[in-house]
View 1 (cartoon, rainbow, N blue to C red):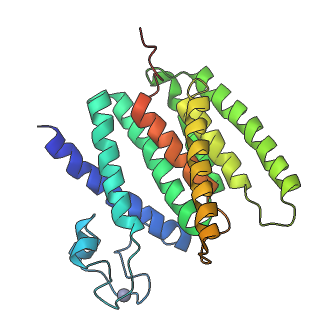
View 2 (spheres, rainbow, N blue to C red):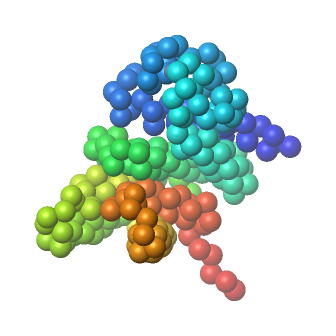
Length: 254
Ligand SMILES: [Zn+2]
């Protein structure tokens, strides 16, 4: 019964995350009434309804026919599914709110990195710090676990960063400082105990996606991207880990 409330709440949260995903890279405030990003016309209220706004417009802006990215309805659905799964796992508890906040940061960061190849320094480090501050109150988490996760992830990702600089000096950095900050957030939010699992999922996903790109390029497609947004895969990996195991981590099979 509760799920009939949680799923729409998830869609609403998704709509809010989309607002951040669209506006943060364009340096717009969150307070103004939404406008079309191309023709600047004020949107009707139904145009920015989560999921339904996109569907009702058939994926094209009603005002000027601009193609609306399919990312946004996907974010709406993903956020709703995430909230439902987290609710089934935690019910109404502090773990639910904490996990939903962590998932929201992962979804926004992953989407912006996918679209703009950009991970924000201050919001990401701020979220990492906030995770450390509240960790003591979260079941299966602790201040020590959060701090250790932040520190170990920071060291690990700085090593990756330096290695990437040496290995690909001529290329555009395949692994940026933003990925270091994102790693620190994942370490702090999920804790050292869950860090290896969360990173493993992300790296396996990134590896699988890169392999698919290589195959597609071999087949002869030219418009295949030369790089992947590594941060996006770290976010998806951490999100999947959170949804599968929560902060308690994989239970031993007895
Ligand atoms: Zn327009």
